[in-house]
Amino acid sequence: MARLRITQTKSYIGSKQNHRDTLRSLGLKRLNDSVVKEDRPEFRGMVHTVRHLVTVEEVD
Image 1 (spheres, rainbow, N blue to C red):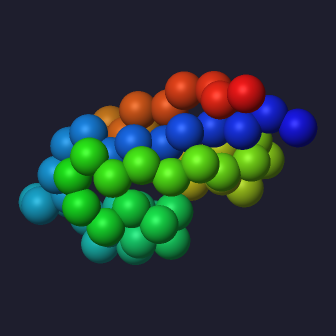
Image 2: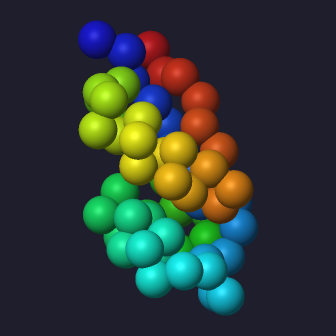
Image 3: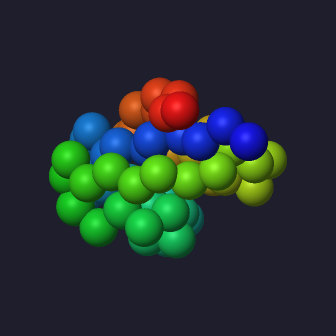
């Protein structure tokens, strides 16, 4: 199964509480943090919610 590297590229200051909670549940705590997650619909939906704050790239 493919994996995704999710990196927080923008600050969550001034964003909605829902967006902050989504970043925290992805495992992102501060700017330039990155996590590797499996490419599943649950994570795709979370990334879609905060797509303006993160970048996503596929990892082998």
